[in-house]
Length: 502
Image (cartoon, rainbow, N blue to C red; front, side, top):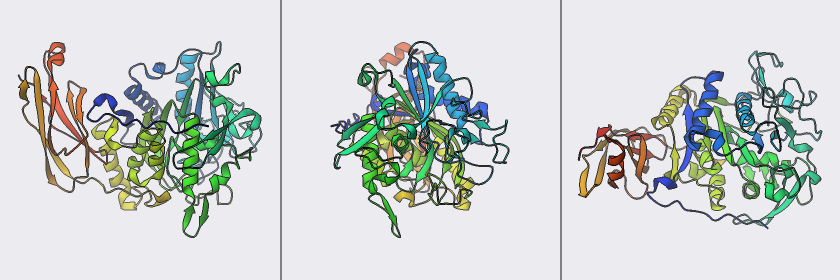
């Protein structure tokens, strides 16, 4: 029996305890090359200059989980857009992984998802939900043409491009290729989850060669009609078999979730199951495709794979961003804010936190990109707000839209005051020029481009941080400092940078 992980509360006011989430965006729809650069930048933000090499080594077995839930969904010429992971991201990440692990020895690379049929061929041309039909369409003709970016345009069972990643239909894995685990999530009855053997660690696999050293998830930014948000946490549901297995009624059962005239019932059962899956094996890295944002996901608004008009348009907007993190709860929390949702209204985030799977506390999330996140959200308000298309749909999956930040704010940083020896107090005060300022979640002191100290407890409108600057004085000939303050919409406000004078 597996039990929840211990919830580790980050130490207050400690920069090293913050959970990093990488963020890179463009003002307009990015080109292919810009997408690749965005991925690289987001990975460096959270992993350091070595990027993927900091978590992957030669000879590793790597599994990449994508979201390929709707290659057949959407209006003509846009099939899968806003539903499925952009193949440009998948192919680029897979090729970066292959460069590291190589082709020799024990190295192995798989790209996996459930394709809603039992045949082991992941790229059946006769099945519209197969990897063969997964593509970024550029000719608007519903055909697989040379200009399209495909998962497997030649239907050979391997990801297109140079990675030679094996494609795997998870729905072809029967009970003999899965491991049944009993899990006891917080405030839940014991649950049975039958995850694929390919997710086992090297140690768990014993003498078997079927295991995974590094698990990477590449979800899509989507709201979700049941869970509220579909990101790194919900992505795991594709590991569940479509078919009934011992102790598991299958994916479409949704653990007894039902839909009536009042909406969805028994949702907590599904959220508990998602947490159970992550307690067995969660991601080592999540890279979120935020090039688009699905307002009423995870598919088209009718939420049906089979009965609905498959030409029903997907309600997506262009969000032109990439997120990355090693914490699936933190990245989903940021994704919720990017969609305009109040994270505290999404039960999945809180339940995952209670099970020790990550943090949903905005005070403890270190978002890269600084003012760019707030600027992107403001641009989405300006572009899509007049059409009532941003924020995402209010109440979808019970997720509630958060009140936007419309404050015009000045952060006034005072001259540092000597406390003792080389210890100084860096004081600031917030001045609201107009509008309403949301709750402040953290204030930070940056010196010469590095985060030196932070405060995420108590009132932050007028405070100070006390810092021993002697190590910095020994390292630099001059110190430039500024104060950055974040509100709960992840909008940040910066003071003017100033030079430190003793």
